[in-house]
Image (cartoon, rainbow, N blue to C red; front, side, top):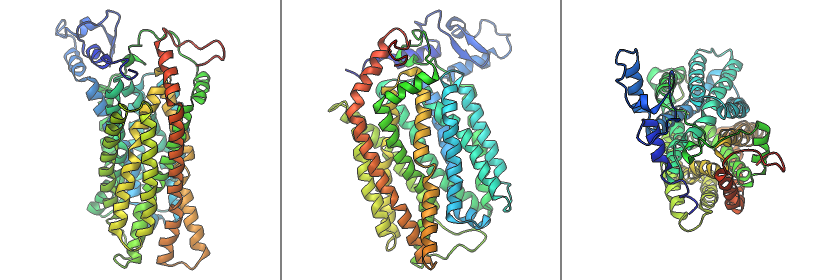
Length: 515
């Protein structure tokens, strides 16, 4: 069986980290102060007077793979919570700075552009240096910048935009590197489950960001306080990562830690990834998902608020605090659909693997095509029924969120361990470049253009944004096609990666210089 090749690796890895029996004398356990042999690690009381030894021993006991995955998932929740806190108070930001739809969309575009430019850099660093130190510094950086941005006055909208770009750099380090640590701690179905938990943080953190932004704004009577909560949690996560998350050897979960004799160059890695058709098509499909989620994240709460104004169940935002429950409701729906989507995706894929080895990309393709139907219906029913729109959002998002963890698992199957951080980073770069780097601004630009073409009214402001958002379901269908293309090449690329892993080294091939 293909997926059982490394069964039992996770328990042996856990034993290695916790100092269990059977460890080789050459094995090392990483600590804050360097490395310790398993013999010293398993006997913490040999030198009871040594300063800090009991503390280090206690830390080692807490460094289980499951605990590390939990902490990394918590950090990912905070990453996306911070990202979408701004979206939760976007009406207040637009009123405070007095800017158009396109300039509000620019906030997310600048964030994503800095995120995607930094991703390949952190991917390169993550394949070569201590990953947990990079993660800890990254999350600390964006936390401080977010906190400082809450004090920017209304005359300096450009500075607020710049701050979102700096936050994108900090969050890029986390998103590029953290999945690779999980990939080196677990294998096969266990890795799928842990990655599912990790990527559950995307919709969960996004939804909590809307809820946090709306709640903090209402409680403090000032939208700036929405940006002062997540930084405190981010600093806490930074400390936990530094203390409790190990930095396993690349490929250690696949029992390759001691067999990697040579690491290929970055240029060689990029050539190999460009030849990997499953990786290329799944990255293009991820871009389609990013396009839709990026546009939805910024504009759907505002679109539903405009629908309420048209239905005369709400008044236009002219007060100091915009009174709207749509951000909170949309956030709650995103949390629930994220949980359902990731869980259903993991279970469905696991079940379908018993029928076909192409299950991963096929499940993604079907879920994408189904999602496009319900997302298209949102803009048909919203004018008459907000509840109907919410039902369509619920089903459409659930189907869309099915593929997040599965896409990451596809990458783990078709890319060798020493190249995964680079692969994750470059996939993040391309998916953002072709996806949500431009979609929020593009949707706002189309909406502004339609509003200028006709007499501005509450009805036309609602319709113009809806017409602009109709671009999303067409992009989602295109993403489904890319996942079908991935299914065509998935087994071949998986076999090539496995054959390469089973060799005793990762030396470049002689014919073209790279695998």
